[in-house]
Length: 299
Image (cartoon, rainbow, N blue to C red; front, side, top):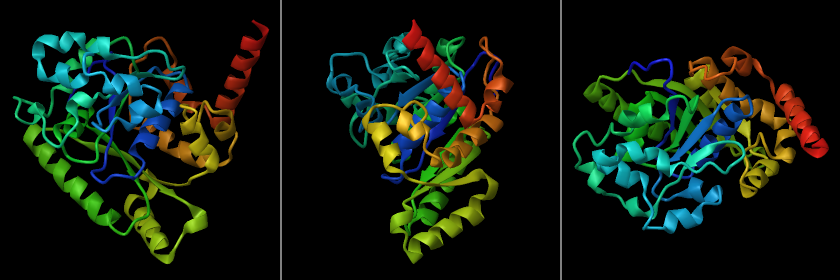
């Protein structure tokens, strides 16, 4: 897909297996980009709506009378209404929430013409608004996951050290190879992140981590989950905005994921120095947040 200079970079956080940290990864990738000055839109493509709930939008999820992303995607006459879905009250990033209207394994989008690549048709509605659009995909290969992939042709894979991970990843590559051929895409796997709990590592867990490191090499990040990270999510913030997680040393390891994504993407300028933003370190983010806090106190 050829995108012009004003079109945001679209990144799908995808793996067909549940419980691997897709929502956590999408939210914190968005947070890491936002902390560097990029304007970011999060899109909850998962019918379960976990990201939507985690960001305090549970009421929107259950409101069947409100306009939903599913409704917009299904009806081309409503494509120009997609910006009406955007929630803008989070301090770090904007959100298109999920809605219970598209809950279930099969929806009309499965049978719609070009049902797998409609979201990409809507990207011109977001020109001049965002540097990045991060898509939290469902744990499957439904049209919702495929829309996120066809829109930007860039994928981040989240994993945990379970025995079936190699098989799940092989299946993902196979499925998206088919999608690539069907739609003449050039899919890039920007990064993969393996989240471990070092206090509960078994020999089998370590075997999977070794497989991960050998398979993904410099594009793989192994990060140790911290209680502070869980508390950030509970507080509806990314790791980069919640004070306890921002000061945690493990964040520097996690941030390699964000750095990998920035190194392989070319977002529109939209009034910022993109290269300077990409070079901002964790320490720089901490200092910037301290300055902003001081300005708020003194205002």
